[in-house]
Length: 249
Image 1 (cartoon, one colour):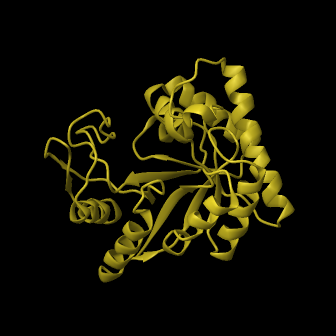
Image 2 (image 1 turned 120 degrees about the vertical axis):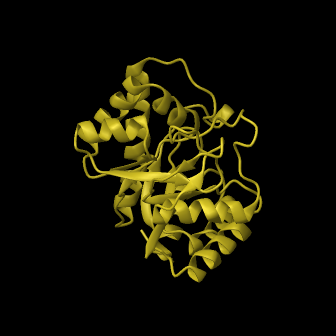
């Protein structure tokens, strides 16, 4: 059995930041590279693409609100036209660099507040899905399993990769618990592994209210901005291997 592990990378500003990102690459199969909106620049995009190619990772764009000051973690009140133009420009910037290196992007994953806003607003989800479906038809959408982006992608028959989270509790309706809820973040690693195995195999795992949930994900998110991300990644892969589960896109 295989499972895809994805990680948001290229969110620094220097080559040294990219070198730290590269330490995670042996443990993942897919990377989402920041492309100048919430973070990243031409240098970090180019280096991230090269490093990812060395590790044979699936490559994707990670666009967010054009707000580096807040790292794309605050909702921006901008027009739909401005937002669509920004997201399209971010994806295209990374695609152009990938093309120069002879690499090919395979997916798009929204970042931060934009990811959350699209899940909370089906109209925004439809708008962004329409953009990707029209302008980047070869790029799969990587997004929350059971969410608004998945529904929007399904409505236009656009390829979608269902994302699950190892370290976040879910509500009874199979949506992520808001971080503001007590217990929304799973801090015990054994519990993270149990949830990960549940998401891979379709076994039951507990919601934040201790009700059993049963659904699967195509890709597991590993948070690369955790100071202990490399150690967590290593422990995760070791735990999966003990269960005869390999990491692969």
